[in-house]
Length: 162
Image (cartoon, rainbow, N blue to C red):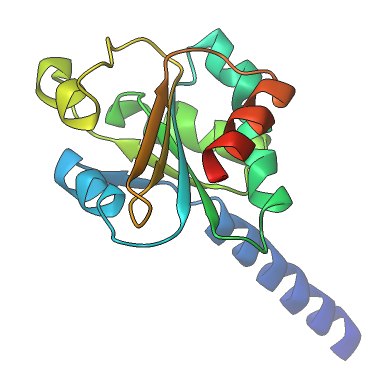
């Protein structure tokens, strides 16, 4: 009977760990700006996406793979969901869990694009997917308003890091 209790306890711990790994934090623009302004030598790969955006969903695994590929380097992937906050539990969290995303996922809780688009990047028209490569210590910033293939993403990131 003790073995059964131990197995149940371990299974519960594993499920709890998996659930914690899949949490999605809801943030406002000032929090995102603060995070993107950190004076670190880490290269940030920030992908703005939504569950309803076909090209976004198609390219998301390529971004998530970067988290594993570059785990021993100063590269951080941040996946910013542009879904409405009301869709967090119905769409975003199930999507993140179903796709077993390893990268950090946040949901940007802003409803007025006229307010936030130019603050994220003045050239951003609002189209998704939108990607931002950023390294504040090196004063480098590059944006892309397009869908990436795995090869294109890798090529752009490698060029940016040089």
